[in-house]
Length: 324
Image (cartoon, rainbow, N blue to C red; front, side):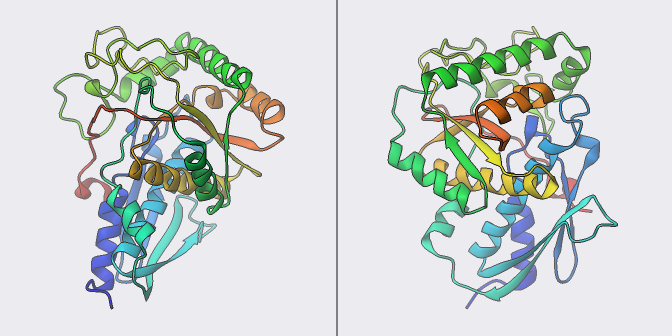
């Protein structure tokens, strides 16, 4: 029997959801908690108006928060009952979650729950430590459990294509003032007390050269921000792409849930992820990738997986800021 009440399980779920990954650490969600269920809502005021016109990345971020809530609720001793997009008249309400029957969390659930606050996004190269193929395949199965395909990109030529398109997209975005101002909005200068955005210490001052160059966002915008070091970690890691068969909000939510499941499982084995969404924010490049590399499936996230020995915390908004 659970030692938590249903209300305590819901409170634990919302507290955990704050730690989900989100694009530029925008944390674009709010939660409403009633006597019986949690409502997960999109905070469109935090949407990237230039880079995420359709809201795809916002919904993926919220999907990651949804999966996190489900893990936390299972850890609290209740099987979550989830309704996705439950009300057509309320498009901002992405999902509801309520405690269902009492259940004892299995070992996998406990492990995933233990990684919720420890997992963090990496923004540099990785150490020269191989990620075993068998482990990567376990991540593929984890994504499949959420109805999403995770494809490791094994071909060096295909990796270079993805890197080149990422560089091209970054170059185009840097020439567009809208994209530049958007990155500035979510960049935190040193000493900032903001509880969202990307801290200056979460990326290296100078990126280490890797064999295939996947550029990171220029959050420092020529200010010389960033952490010293990072030159010893020069491996690209395993490049992988999340794809879905269709491309609507339900698919984006599923992609976010699969993403967080993969990230928590990876974190439990000492593997971190670096994200590269630049090419997916330009519709022509995203369509090219869909048709030429991913057999018609829609790419939702490009990432690199690898080992890093750097530990960096990530700021989160207090509960009072995300509760309605």
